[in-house]
Image (cartoon, rainbow, N blue to C red):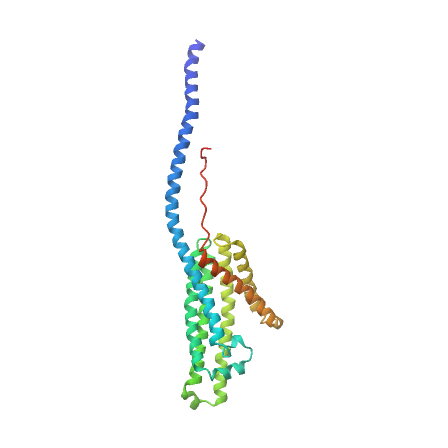
Length: 288
């Protein structure tokens, strides 16, 4: 009787073993096919999204390089002698501004171009990194927009100075010394707006570079250097108001060069490469 009853038990055990061996194999094949289909669909969607993101990154990079180029061109060909941020002599700058109506107007309109490019760069960087931290990305965007607005005020002050230099009504309303004083106030206002904008923009760039470092969309060395350079500029600009020794030309040249390397490197990478793409993950439980 034991042997008779043992037969069904053995058969059931044999069927169970067979199912475990071959059924598990078939199930794993089906899982692999489903994973392949799912990954193909995911990559189709991802490739389209990444294509758009690469275009966005390149537009942002071109805008950033254009912003740097317009700033350098303006400093060399337009603002020389009439920009207080390039000279510490308020009296000499104000005197030169009274004789440079056309250049002051050109400086003002170049500032408007820079304002638009700065906003474009800020929005582009925000779009690239907002998934990493919506809070920090939004904060960086708002700080950058505030910085761009302060730079735009510099264009207003330049246009005011152009009016003082070229409008004959001011020659009637004010003496030469009074016009010089009014122009010096415009120059000083331009300096303070630029000073504060540099602090805000550096803090914003530090946030953007940190999120780029976290996302891995740009090389870690570039993003890490950007965080360092941005924080260096922001802290030094604030500290120099309380420690005059930090206002030495060598110190200024050092942190401005660090910042220039970071933003030029980012602009070139975004323009040429775009961003780093994500790598596909390997299937779990794939058949070896």
